[in-house]
Image (tube, rainbow, N blue to C red; front, top):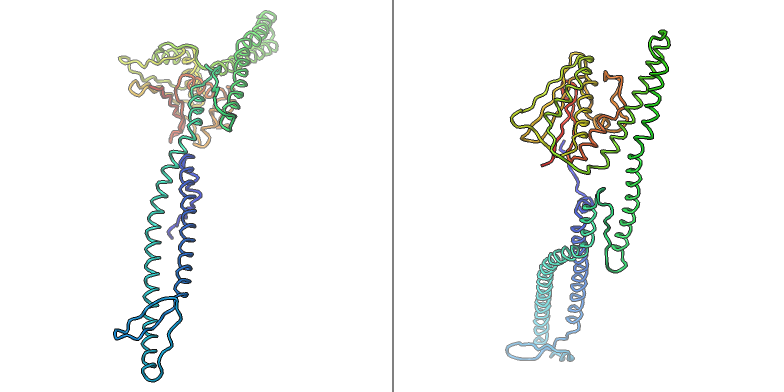
Length: 408
């Protein structure tokens, strides 16, 4: 059976931009008021002409041409006899004919008035819509100015303010509220910057002292039980330090870039592949790099952050893989994209957005048993700091394809 889609006018209007809705509202209001005015004029005109026609009296005058005169005078008494009867009959017929003629003229006049008034109403409604569009644009011009200024304000220039001038109206209060919000954001970002600057020393120093105490206090040779305890404590210390480094890196990338320099992605990818070769060998995963040596992909950015970005993507592809699997890193200079594809278990498409959330990992079907669930969230944060877009899609045969697209 065919499915009939019902169109709700309110739904269609709600999908229009605000300026268009204002113009449609102006035109609709004009059409409604004009229609009511036209209807009242038609009703009153019909009622008034009917009253005038009923108030007209007819006078009969004996004349060879049987002509009649109309006027508000008293009717003349007709003559008696057969001539009077025939005259009365012809007079009644003439009255009916005149009445029909008057009504026809009245209906024709009303139809013409309604027709041309309706045409004029439609034309004026269109004109009202166009004028409403322009008036709405003028009324919303301060909002457009606020929007443009808000787009230019970022983390790097939070000190800027809208400082809207003019009367103390709704738009002025909106701009003041926005400036107040920027004040709070600027204080928050300054607090975050101070935290990132101090957290490295405050958090990593105790871990370094702890690690040194373990290494010095429990030197080799040790009994088997103590050696296992020391190794477990050192491993826990190393994981805690990795977690702190990851959190600090995430906070640093969220702050944006202070300065950039040209970064060769091909050279960085080769260094990352060499660094992660032991991890790939331990997981029985082969890492392949496909890059054009004659046309290297060079992007502006922070070399340290870009290396962390590629490292996180490649490590994620190695860890969440399967024995005998493959990781392929491909750099495309023409499109300024880098892709990291891996084999492995199938990933449901609806689960992909969760992988970019901090401390979120895929289910137990992924083979990795280590990691904090920060790799892809850090990678996306670094990509956004470089004006790049990091996306992921599931491969039909299993695994993921991570695409890093740099802007022009």
